[in-house]
Image (cartoon, rainbow, N blue to C red; front, side):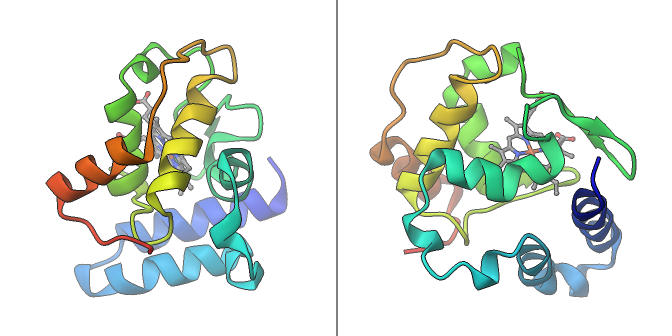
Length: 147
Ligand code: HEC
């Protein structure tokens, strides 16, 4: 685990463990730590780039996950990824120590990063996940869009 990953992971778990009034700065600070604030054209990023920029910090570049400041499940060969909506929902809303990225990612990016993790790291779930799927799920979760 490199230093940047440790910082991102420690920052994220510290902030997520904090009181509710700390919830607002969580996104801003963790995105600063991943350098997203300096990536002018992040809105154009595709699934692989979204994975590398956001997800890899916790789930590792090879999807093997990590144990350290927190526990980050492996996405590699993970049978739970068979359910595309489960992955989309995790990306939008997060759960436990994973923050949601609904405010940061467009429907297209959520669909692409979902497809990316479901077709890499030994996963072979190649049914198509569309922008429309994400849009519908987002509406049902009533979360904010990045667009
Ligand atoms: C700040 C660290 C962090 C980041 C960044 C992060 N995750 Fe997670 N992720 C977690 C943690 C912690 C869990 C376990 C959450 C729980 O307890 O349910 C998790 C769980 C998941 C799961 C469910 C795995 C399972 O076995 O149930 C998926 C799928 C997932 N993440 C995908 C992603 C994707 C895709 C991204 C990038 C858009 C991402 N994560 C970014 C920390 C992170």
